[in-house]
Image (cartoon, rainbow, N blue to C red):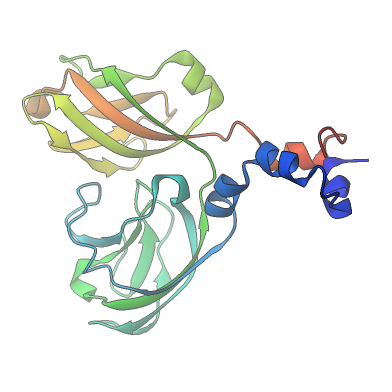
Length: 226
């Protein structure tokens, strides 16, 4: 019998163990499709992780978005059904997208003030940690075990010791960051800062890693604790 079949059996003596095994709270926040109503990206205020041209709805670190399914704007400079921006692309007029850090983003010029969004979250485990940065290159080399596990999203990057300290705008992986920006490289093995302008030597980064407890693998494996 697989763990999936054991879940269907729903033995009350073992369900609590099963919920712990799959990290039920993280699963509900990070893998179940989310429906959010009456959102106001303008009221969310400036978000330092997103580019100036975008208004953003900041999502929790454990529940960042992977892809938008549908969005409908009730009020603002643009109303009605919204188009979905291409992955990693900044939203154009009338579009909604996912920012490089996993937030929901809209073109600021659209001035959306009331919007419903249905989206698929990005599942993973959150890690916030401080690392040194090479001053000459602006490169923060992530430890090999993290790279081997798999970095999914760079959600925040804050320069703690630098010429220009503070939280950075997060750009798409592979983008060469300008002053005030940070980005993963294409392989997601390093976090890159603007070497000359920012002069970063130590930074705190918030990363979403591949989940330690893969749900599909757990459900397909033979019954263990449930």
